[in-house]
Image (cartoon, helix red, strand yellow):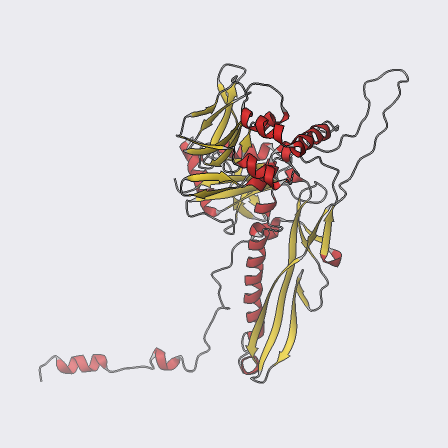
Length: 465
C-alpha cells in the first residue's frame, strides 16, 4: 500500500446524503406537457369570426357578368403539350360552350412553340392574329411608357392566356409586347385556323354572337351590373330609372369539421391527477392540434381555403422571382384597406433579403403587443401552413377583413353542446370494456370572401434564390 492510498479512499468516502437518494423524498418540479407543433396561428387570430347559424353562410352579391377570365389546363406526353379541350371554355367568348366535338377540333388547331428567356413572343403594334396560351413558364406584358421608357403591365404564368379578342372577329393590333421571362412553352391558334372552324360550326358561330351581345350589357369597372344615374344636369331632364340586380345563385359556405376521438384510460384519470389533471392536459394538446389543422384547412382546403378561392383577377406573378417591394406594392394597390399580409416564414426572410439588397429597411409594427415586420404599414404575419413547393416557390396573401369592409371573414357557430372554446366542443362517448373513456373532440369552421378583391395572392414566389 502506498502512502497516497489512504488519502484517496478518504476522499471517496461519502460525508453526506447523495442527491440521487434525496430525490426519493423530494417533490419534483415539472412542466405541463410541451408541444412543438404549436404555431402562432395568426390567421385564426386576425380573422373576424362571424356566426353561421344553421351551419351555413350565404354570400349575396350584385350580379356580375362573367367574362371567362379563367386559367386553362394542359396535358403532355413527353415534350408534346396539348390544351385540354374542355378548358378552352375558359376563354371569354367560349364561356359556357359545351360542344365537345368542336372544342376538341379547336384544341387540335393549337400549335406548340418554345421560347428562351428574353425572346419576344408578340410585338407591340403588330397585327393581333393569334390566341396565345401560356402552357409553362412566365412571360411579361410590356408597353412603351409616356416618357419613352418600357413599362411592365403584367406578368403571366402557367394557364394564363392573351389575344382571345381574336375570336370576336375584330381586327386590331397588339397593344403590348410579350417577352419570355423564363423558358416558356406556349400554344398558339392562328386567325385562319379559327376562321376555318368557325365557318364549319353553326353552333360555334351562334355562341360567339350570343356572347358578344351579352357583353354589351352595361356594367361597371368591376363587372357588376350598372346602376344608371344622372349627375351634373340642369333643368328638368328625364331621370333614368334603375335597380341593383343580384346574383340568382349566390354561394353558400357550409361549416367544415375537424374531429378526433381522444381516449384516456380511467386508471390514469383516477390515480394520476396530481398535481396536473391528466384529462385536461390531454384535451389541451388535442385542441391545439385541431386548431393547427383548422388553420391549415382555411389556407389549403380546395372548397373554401383562401389559396384556392382567390379570384383569378386577384392573382399576381412576381416580376423577377423573389418577393420584392414592387411585388408587395402591387398586392397593396389592388385593394383598399389591406389589413395584413400572410406569408411563409421563409418568404418573409426572402423579402427581407430583397429589401436589404436595395438598401431598404422598412419599419416594423406592433400587432397584439408583438413586434412583426411590415411593408407600407401593413403587417407581414408568418404562417407555416402556406405550402412551399419542391422547386422552392410559395405564395403570399394580402387581405381586407370584416363584414363592414366587405372583406374576408371566418365562419363558426357558438353555443354548441359541451362547448369548450368557440366553435369547438368535447362530447363524452362512454367507457368501453377495457375501462378506456372516449371523448369526441370537434372543431367547426369555414371562411368566406365577401367581395373578390378582398383577397389577393402573389404566386410563384421564389424563396430559395
